[in-house]
Length: 171
Image (cartoon, rainbow, N blue to C red; front, side, top):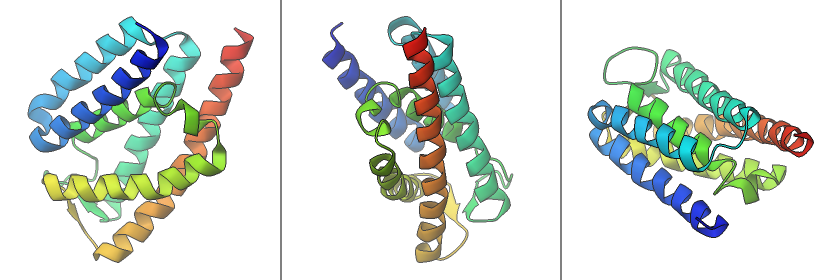
């Protein structure tokens, strides 16, 4: 598979997995997560450092979504403060795009943070409208908090990406 095709396929897998996970929740998320792991492992994963990058992004996302649940910014259908499995699957899918389809923007700190500040809250807003997750505060306040959190996520993910790149170049 050529590089461009791999990048496009990576982006398509993210989009399809995101839509199916949000629409069908936990009932399909396990299948999507397993498929994503198998496909990524077979066709994309190149190093332990890349694996560490992906795991770090998933853990960051889980921590952020748990914080949003604890503070009541997001209200999960189960009533638990931690996100449902399908939301963790979204982080898995997103993490696999960082070294591939989002690599071009992840390499540019300012652009990636701006992308995160806009894209993160928009993704949550769409997800809330399509799933059982609800906003626990008024829309504008929720978007501002999500934007702030995603600015932090963007900075941290870009830092992880930079570490991964430097480790990949020394391998």
